[in-house]
Image (cartoon, rainbow, N blue to C red; front, side, top):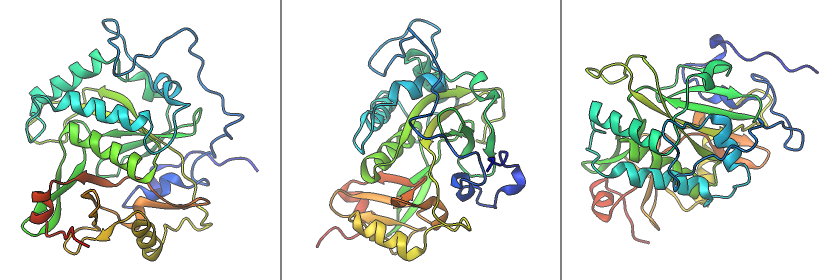
Length: 303
């Protein structure tokens, strides 16, 4: 049976996320043994520990090839996120730094060889532009989903709010730490591809156009549900409990793990997929709290 064409915007629900992972909405990714990776012979891709030549950039395909043999919840993918977060955190302000912070992010992207050019998006089928944090594309050659944050906006992370677990806008380093946590805690396949900048308007009021975006990718997840249904709340609850989490009482779909003070919000059904291997998260807002933050959020850490 021939694969259907990529979806149009009318395919997407108001959430815009869940349908991203359904095999009958986008071409089914090739099996690993037959997948054709882009050929980039004799081109070394700089890692975060290497200093590239001036003006050097890393394409999405290059970054994917650089990571293709790395798997596991504590792989170099998580380490790359944390290394980048550590570098960006120096001098970072609580609000991400505005225009000055944007220039710092672009400077880091150039130094590390992780500037993703416009050309990398030209032939990627767009899957959604209606999610609150990312534009979403599909890369048929690798079977990966490419997610680009909205210009000047780096998603959200949990925050303590007067006895409750709330959310706030993330700084660039916090966004990267969030991706690392999802890899480490849930064994997700998130990869840092780089930084992209265009002349599009910023999502932050008062900031000029041309703000940078993070670009990350994630392996395609296919649901076992013929009707594209997400996991039930009971299935998600079982999954979270199996990973040591408890429900956060005053939160937006929030959970916390007393063992290491890892907190999660936005863990609603549309952010999970029930695959043949079980429940898998797509995109969770995560952080690790200090003891003081746990107390401020009203989260119990005892037995």
